[in-house]
Image (cartoon, rainbow, N blue to C red; front, side, top):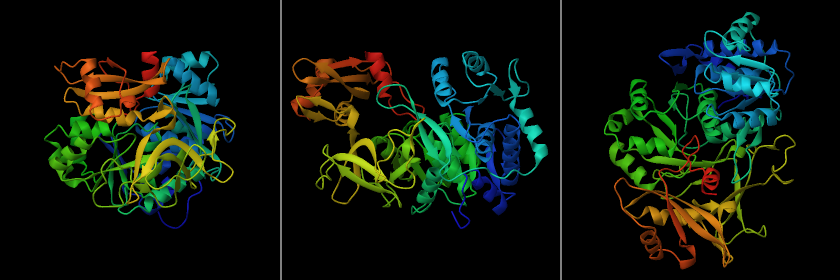
Length: 508
């Protein structure tokens, strides 16, 4: 990013159009949109939304997949001085109703397929403006395409608001309870783009063609992917969903140079011989959202010669906090070091900085930290700007950070802390185990005990007793599972991370 610092996230599109008007901004669904055309569409969307009698700061839900409509709607909402509320297209009616009701969204942009669910929510007191994509709007709704066409008559639109004004409200699930809306101002998202731009080598540069296949309703794809493409006037290859063979073909066809990915993507690609040729254009591959298994990283390196680097972050930090890009080869099992502009310290339960090598909860500070949770900014940074991430880590002798676990997910057995991740890694060493997740369960003698949920490899025959005995060989007795349940699959979030909240609900 260069001079002329933007104030509103939508300024990124305007600046890219000024720099490189004819350069491809997005390849999507067989068509290419250049930066000048994208900027004009954003203007049209902002003007169209302005005709709905919405007030500055009103929330607009974006209940869409990875489409051009999402991109235009997102930047159009921001240029209009409104607040974007990206929503998972796979939400159930109850989940959609909670997010829309909690946010007080006055408008919702959705698809014809999701319109019946959206109407059901609207009847129950949801948004008064239901905007549907596609060629024709169903009864009881308005056409998003017509709104944009009508708005195009107004020409250029200047961005309203920015800086500390709320830009995005992202619903994020904690370890328990209903999702909460993380309040991200323009300042935080722009700051993280500036911080990541200072990483060497950069994740995205002006010359890059970036694969955008992770869901845009998630902060990782929204900011580190789409936001970075706009910030650098790069080119994005937008795919509606991840399909292993189709995504490899898109990488090959568009000569993708930068990949913002997640472990399930690399797992699938690592099993496909075609990955080697497709990755010949790739300059840098990043993985985030959850830990990348060591064997997947190694298989990808063997196939492509590429090192897969990792990043760590949170919705609340817009999102990136650390990356493993400080060296040419990532430190095994590490989340790397803080990026420029992010301060990080490890503290114990008493709030004291831990000794070198000891685990502690990560506290972070920087311009990228959110305001707090909707609507009253509770749970945000303290008066000195520090935010408690809830994640426990330790720093090795070289200064690289290693995640231990979520503080709220630690199992307290007779007062001793057990990190689920540690137990899961031992379980995965058994040849019959494909996936494993560890939870705490009440125990009358020890307070809590370790429970394992395991997905076996196809055809494997393994007993619970065998797995418990396997753990005894590598872990202290109090860390070993007292119960093992075998399941068909582990529930995952949109970015492939195991959903401990859903696991608790399923195993209750």
